[in-house]
Length: 301
Length: 319
Image (cartoon, rainbow over all chains, first blue to last red; front, side, top):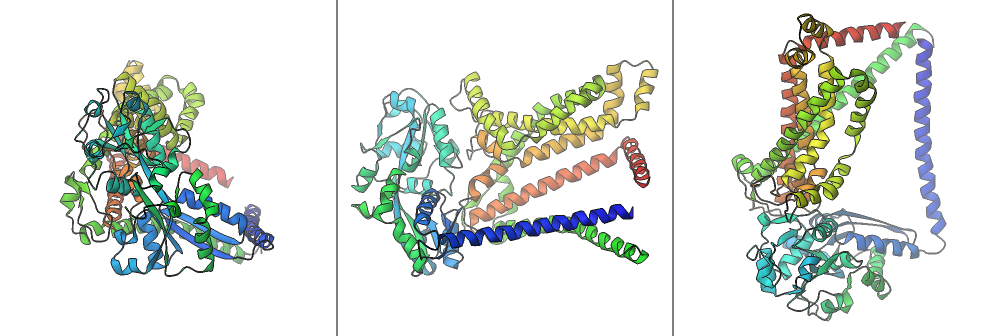
């Protein structure tokens, strides 16, 4: 009995030692990677960012590219939604708050005034439909038709020149930034018919559902459409949803993606923001389906 | 080291550690409950909605800012959860009971060696897999078989849930049936009963409370399931009108909105209240299970058997 107990004590002690070993091992790793990079760049520090999940893929990609140049800068990017990003940057919890919407829409005026807006890129939202809709002849909708479809007034494709087939609305949840942008600029602020539409948690799933549902219409950011996806985009008032048409101001459904800092950013954060808005990264940005802010010929809607 | 003093020191040391572990679990449960009450009560206290509106209104339009002013009726989600889980239960229970009887009464050897491990593997499959299979197989199947434009539906969610809770109900009710004392069956056979009569008139009634517990456990799992349901239910904010309707459930609404809503805002607070409601529902299920397994005297056989087994094991340990 006593012997067994002794063995167990040894086992416990050993496992504790293993864990301690693991922890110190981790510590060593971290410090060694740090010293490896210090010879090719002198910028060091850390940046934390949180907010918009629509912007996160781009920021993640920019972080990877930025870290190739400056390996000593440690950048953490969290999602959490635009509102959460704005709230945290306003409270000083993070250095950068990513947002799909202007700070004044989520925060009160005094708090919003403290924040500095960096318009890092342009996101264009496109209405997308199942291929059978474009095959039946609908490739363009007027804005009024689009509004009537999303508010549930038009429920059959034959009313807009297509086949006799019910329209299936596939949308995003109320709190989604994509939905907010689409509502504001494509639907002129009209409320979507929530009780007639299927909501999907993210744009990837939405794309999948539009692809597999006959008669379906939805909307996604162009960044989801850079690869062949099996859905077709619809022109609004004869204008195709492309980055070129967004730059020239012909296509209306776009928004700036914002990266807010509280006051003037510190050196490292400024360097990162400069990098993400640079021409060098801009080319990469366009291949990912995001628009470069500096190319916009119309600055406001 | 080998002195009596050392033994006592260890005795107290380990007893303290184990007691702390035990208390810790209780504290965590209480803290989670308290946290949900704290977060969830904001809907009623800060945004001034009534409990009546929250439970019985189908008008769900909370505003994602600190001022509030939207509406937070969650009837749609409650009905959505009840109908999908109810449908799942209706489909799964007959199959689960049948297979529990099969693996304990009809073919116990095969049941123990083969069927039981299969059910256990079944129970271990993560819900996202069920959801994904449901989305790629079930949804198109419903679309084709019933000739509908959209395959997402309460029916799809009910079927996915039925498959998910089937192993839970099966294994728990098989345990309940197995714990019916052998003498009961011998007595029934002695009176000239057939096997079916024995199962139907003796074994099932004797294990009824255990079987109800199994069903409620299955229901609890179905209620808490979010991911698989979210993938096939179609997520429409409207009360369902048939089993082909798309709607939302309590859990799917939380997962859909929590990522984008702002902490402290009306939407997020309403979601916390939904979480609190789920917590209360699962508490209710647990009370029901305790109530059922205490009520019937038949379970005393099971309890006695358990205590005997425990004593024997204790004796073996000492040897």
